[in-house]
Image (tube, rainbow, N blue to C red; front, side, top):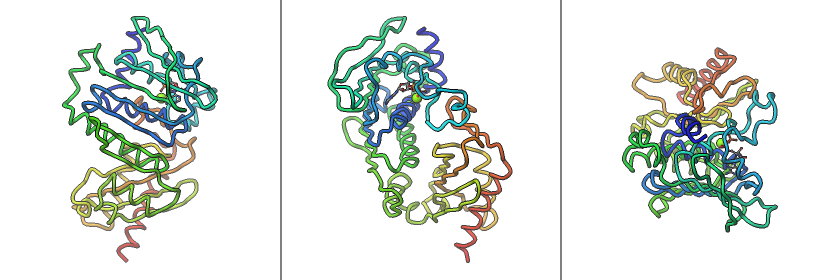
Length: 329
Ligand code: ADP
Ligand code: MG
């Protein structure tokens, strides 16, 4: 069992940032709107994430740590329109097999909290009572301590921290309604306060925290609604945000994606109205009916496949081109 989990871990867990991504997605799936992420040594020594979500009942703790145990798919139909972020049921088991993981949780309806962890080759689950408010904490220490071949690929603390930071930025841009605090080496290094819905000024404030003040000050707001597509967000150019050409975030139905079709459509729109040296920078949210897109192309879930590629491409090209055109007029 341990070996199978460790192999699966290779797909899910590459480095501390991928652990953070999986755990935060779980917390969001659990309905949390407050996350506290504590890191030591860029996450290599420790990653501890506390959420105020629905919690895991005592009887479900062991299941949550076992492979292919997901509470999120109940029928094949669900598989086709996956709304929740996680759906594979192996993140926790995988992470647990390559680290020292402790899971502490308390659903609101349960009087006391319980803590669970696995031990030994067969990954037997142990549990004991614990103290914890409503919600869940996952405490992970010494990632890859038992898989030296993997550990070799970890970079310096600073590099690992910057990967984690980037992962959290993407989440901060996808969930303005969630309060996120990040601690590193016992210092609070990031705080993204929860934003009231549709408060544009507050949204720009979070945008500034994530993408820098220059981007937030210069970015042009986009909103374009069609049927059945919708695009909103902000666009600018790299020179406007002091050459931070790495501000290129696109989200499909709320998930961060790096999609070639999207980036191509964006680039084409820029080429129509701006000189070629103006590199697009953007934070864009594309929405479409979930049944028109496949999200499980890759286990790391960064890729999508649109059923109507041409229409998606043209819609995005049009939406951005017309915003750039209006700005120039
Ligand atoms: P998946 O997210 O694919 O279902 P995971 O291995 O990531 O699989 O998690 C296993 C299960 O543990 C989840 O389906 C969920 O029921 C539970 N779980 C994990 N993390 C949390 C959390 N932070 N709050 C509540 N439940 C959780
Ligand atoms: Mg998950």
